[in-house]
Image (cartoon, rainbow, N blue to C red):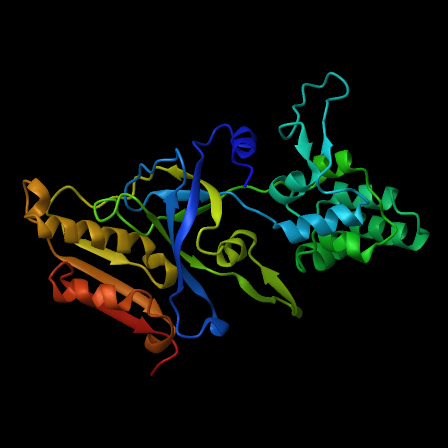
Length: 330
């Protein structure tokens, strides 16, 4: 992880380097839809400072394999360094810190799988040496229906288009300018520092499913599949974003509705409620009111996320009541 370089790439984020301490499957059958519980801990000088139900912004990563494949397709050595400079006086800014390795630009900057925008299709057309391929790329860029059906609906990004149109050879600088950029993905934190301030937990549904309208193709979540592939000890760049989503500071009743991975912030709240209860309301000047959780999923035996923790909270009186609904059961 080129952490210092990523700090320059995202200067507005207080970036942390986090390592996977735990990664476990929460469903009984991942083939029917995987949901991962991931615990992250700071590396080196990075320090956690968060509240339960804050957001964690995770930097996306196309992966070394895909970045290397695209570099090879463009006839470039992944480790080669390059510099970008602005031509003209239009006020544009260099889109990434330079010097930069080609592999880093293709791995952490360009979204290689997001639907390619029309100007990028025209760039591919202009650099295609085969007339038939150039004509098809121009058609995709100019026809609203063709663009929607072939690029948007089927999710064809620059990596796949370079495979399909083998004669296209766009210059790297132009490709970096026109291709979609990777943006951080935000996940609600599923833990409270009042239980363990040294880790931050995520509840992540791994997006890996057939495309709507074209089930022969698979839709892959860029960040979720990245998190799924991270081994214990693997690192990721991330940042905390404060949230206003908090438990009331009064005895008002609390109703929590969190089906599926929507239960994540309420797991954090359960940990806070348990901490309050264990030390006599943690010095609060009020007694916590009625707390109720509604949870829904497909089947209790398949994807009742954190069932043991939720039932334990109910038994201990941390939760006054739990109500469940299972859509695939009678």
